[in-house]
Amino acid sequence: MEISLSQSFLIALAVGLASGSVGAFVVLRRMALVGDALSHVALPGIALALAYEFDPFWGVAVSLIGAAFVVFWLETKTKLPSEALVGLLFTASLAVGILTIPDEEIIHSLFGEFPLMPAYLLMLIVATALIATAFVFFSTRRFAFRIIAPELAEASGVKQTNNLLFLIVFAIVVALGIKLVGTLLMGALTIIPAAIARNVTRGMKAYIVISAVLGMAIAALGVLVAHSFGLLPGPSIILLGTSLFIVSLFWSVKV
Image 1: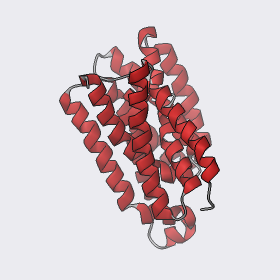
Image 2: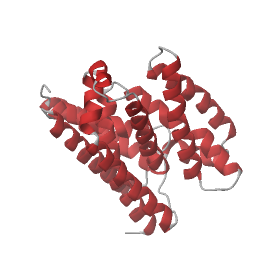
Image 3: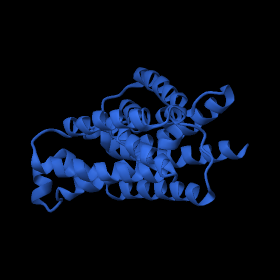
């Protein structure tokens, strides 16, 4: 297996696992469109990184984590839902990114590529994805409590800062997968595994575990399919996941 494929496969396994685990709560919180829109906020970060000739990953990470804080701050200042707030950021960021990213970079920025990166960055992405996954599983009860009974959770000491923590983890996971899947499609990788798991599982624990496993499997298989047929990895991963979602409809159970 060539180096770029090996790196992409490893990233797909780790990021897919993290995407599936955090995506389980994205779907439960009805933030699916937020996840899709949030990934587009990375575009100005990519443009800035290219302009100053440093790795776009760092521009993406700063942009998305910054956006998480902005969304959380806006939520405390307005009654508008997260979807509307991220939508505003999304449209502005998409416009800025398309106007400023060089033409030769725009396709890879939007739809991903088979990245070839330094060993330290590869290990950082994989390690961070695994830490994010562990954090999501460790925080399952708090996140679920906040979703099911937000007022009771507040009264019990599960504070609104948990929303900020969730947004930060969500933003980090999206940032980790941008190079492989692309800004237009990374949000979908957090949604599709959870949507499939929601169709085929009964119970919270099984739902989260299967969502995480499906995220890893879909991303890894998508990379292999893309490499085998000379396709971009992002669209291949998402189309594979969408196909599995359609199949899952025939085994749908009530959660």
